[in-house]
Image 1 (tube, rainbow, N blue to C red):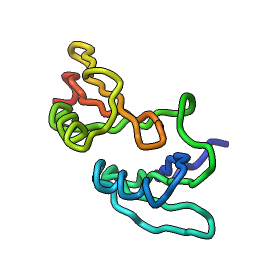
Image 2 (image 1 turned 180 degrees about the vertical axis):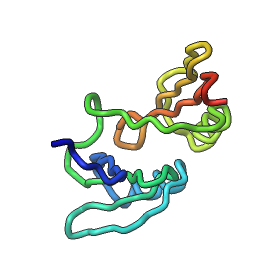
Image 3 (image 1 turned 45 degrees about the vertical axis):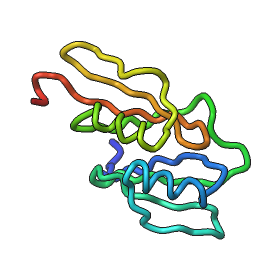
Image 4 (image 1 turned 60 degrees about the horizontal axis):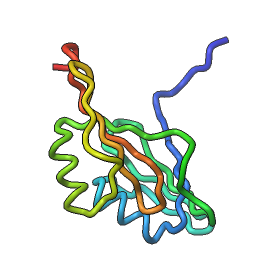
Length: 126
């Protein structure tokens, strides 16, 4: 029997402070807070991608290497990079180009969780 997915996805990220992380994800990345449950040290934000949310879980030790990297598609990676630069967001080098396929940019949240933007360059996209 196949798994019957409903089309939704919540990506959980560990952070050390909801008070610091919620403004970063909303102000820098433009996500919107859906709800916050302080008794569970958890919140969810909408991402602008239909039925894909980011959940932030407050824990003592967060960030660093390992785990999944959330990679968000953007229409203009140069404009997205400029917004990150404007907000002083640490990045892992310049935009990387894979000709005729994709442009990639890795950056980090305040807890050193790696996130990425991609711009689709494939013929199928445009």
